[in-house]
Length: 103
Image 1 (spheres, rainbow, N blue to C red):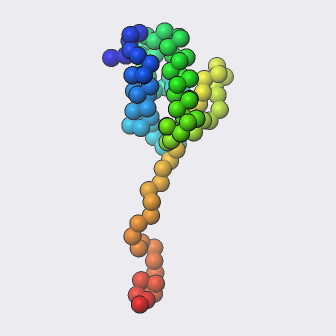
Image 2 (cartoon, rainbow, N blue to C red; image 1 turned 90 degrees about the horizontal axis):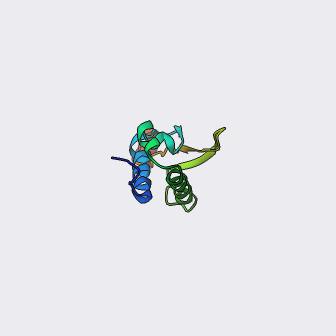
Image 3 (cartoon, rainbow, N blue to C red; image 1 turned 90 degrees about the vertical axis):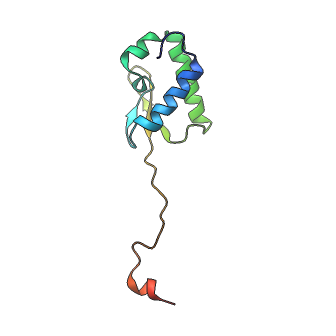
């Protein structure tokens, strides 16, 4: 349960897990979007600001790699977009018969 006593480190881990598990590729979100309204409002403003700074710093250092910064809201909140990660190509799908039969 998230409350005013939840550490910033725990909140950061929770935010990263929610990006990984809950945000779809291509979706744009703010850090606030990763928490339900009740959870977010329980956090003191200084803790929210610290969390935002740490999250952005981890993004800038390449620790969080599946997102990109995507501008700011009118209220100055950082927007992020989850990247669409394509899976590497494997197999011979798409080769024509001549290519696959050549020796």
